[in-house]
Amino acid sequence: MAKQLLKGNVAFAEAAVRFGLQAYFGYPITPQSEALEHLSGRMLREARVFLQAESEVAAINMVYGAACCGVRVMTSTSGPGFSLMAEGLSYIAGSEIPVVVVNMMRGGPGLGNIQPSQADYFFMTKSAGHGDFHPIVLAPASVQEIIDMMGLAFELAEKYRTLVLIAGDGSLGQMMESAELPPMQPLPALRPNWAVTGADGREPNVITSLYLVAEHLEEVNLRLQAKLADIRQHEVRFVEAQTADAELLLVAYGTSGRICTSVMRQARQKGIKVGLLRPQTLWPFPAQRIGELCEQVRGILVVEMSAGQMLEDVDHAAGGRVPIRFHGRMGGMIPMVDDVLADLQALATSLGLAP
Amino acid sequence: MSQAVAVPEDMEQVYAYPRSLTQANSHYCPGCVHGIVHRLVAEVIDELGIREKTIGVAPVGCAVLVYNYINTDFVEAAHGRAPAMATGIKRVSPDKIVFTYQGDGDLAAIGTAEIIHAANRGERITTVFINNAIYGMTGGQMAPTTLEGMITTSTPGGRDHLLAGYPMRMSEILAQTAGAVYVAREAALDLAGIRRTKRAIKRAFLAQIHGLGFASVEVLATCPTNWGLDPWAAMQWAKENLGAFYPLDTFKITDEVKALPV
Ligand SMILES: Cc1ncc(C[n+]2csc(CCOP(=O)(O)OP(=O)(O)O)c2C)c(N)n1
Image (cartoon, rainbow over all chains, first blue to last red; front, side, top):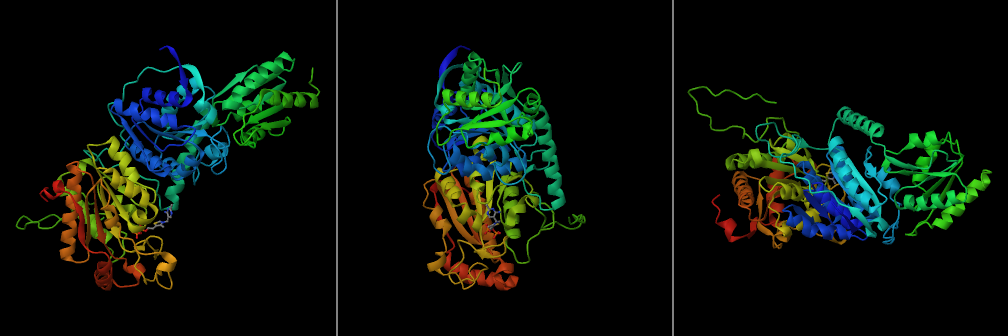
């Protein structure tokens, strides 16, 4: 399929359709409403389900209901809407059904603004709702990667019967880039045997997150944790650039990761030996690889559009072996290449690495 | 589990467990109406022959374990979200019969938005709404349907509208939505009422089977434990007091629903 110029929000929505999305429920919120708008016509033309819900609370519970029927279903939102979905996300995690949610992060807290942000990192990776669970969190850095990650998100959600979140930000949603969409995939003819489809010729299926007996719930918790351990072991994804000879390491994801690619290029021209690690999964986090690189590099610069959230995971992975500096912008501001470069140079100088 | 008893050859079986009801021992208090209405729903499902394609949505409230009793596929919703979940299920499974079973806290407080919008969209779902005028599961706090003056664990001086607002007549509100095709209130407080309640529930399922729109049946019920009354007294109290404030009526019925043979 040929490349075409696509807006991030439209790209992920259209990619979802082609990867077999059977139902979409959502509530408008900037900066991702184009996805909902695109799907409003597209899904109906494909004779699939689209519904604008009365709130994000309703949207996630419609998603929950449809997911219990074993179909590919998703919603998309941004910060304030994602907050409202937390209850539903926890029930979805507790009942172990596959669901995909895109959060195009915007400035916060509160109503904040509609500019790009990465300030929902903690929320998405550590505590997307009450109780013990982690969703898989994917972090695309380009329109092409959002497209590819939609397919991956559905695969992982179904493989592990788990919640998969896509952590985008306003700029990824709004930017236009040339990208290639996948071909249309056929929809599955059958629904999985765990789904609610009517107890015809079998015992009733009950999908619940309620276990009143403490011993039973702990068993469920342990099974859930074992699954998460399995995900941790097998699903860590990241991109590494120029780390072979690196003395310094940039760690950044999404839009910040893209900016750091430019920073790295310019720093290399100045003779600073810097590499980049861009996590593609925020949970599970590439802690092990960062730990390994700490045996080689002399210092790390973490760049985020937040007050420093992934920073805590990098810090934990580094375990005090190398100094870590942080460059963060908030409020919808995007890190500037020159500013990050200046911080990187300062780090190099402080370590006696300046050329 | 109680044992099914074989019927001797010279006798005729005149009463039995509905197929759609399990034989699990119920966790409900003596005099609670939930068990009665569970049975009515199961009988209706049997009579309509829809057990194999029915999906229930359980509430949060005393009926949270309804899936232990009604023997169909079930999902357990978050508190108040059953109509949204039912919407998701029905939209991707239009050939199934989807119902929610909800209490008054679930439907009329935390889930008000979800039920009104599901009704207004005309979702092809059926809602059974148990109004016992109190939060049973959490120990007897005020519900939106608690009558003025009623003492609950969170209205120790009796519900005062200046402090806690007025009791809410949800069926009357739901009947205002364009998408609702059948909205009725019955009382499962005596034999005649139980029979009428069953008829209404059947009509609400039939409306869905015929794809007509949203249908709900509110059922006036008791909570002897949290009202501090014995089962008999609770039934009488409900008839007199709930019945006075919440008229038993059909608030909306379209011609198509009226035409359905029940
Ligand atoms: C979000 C949330 N808030 C509060 C609760 C606690 N809670 C459980 S049941 C319930 C009230 C149930 O009352 P009702 O719907 O009238 O049903 P009943 O128990 O009387 O049958 C409450 C407040 C909860 N489970 N979830």
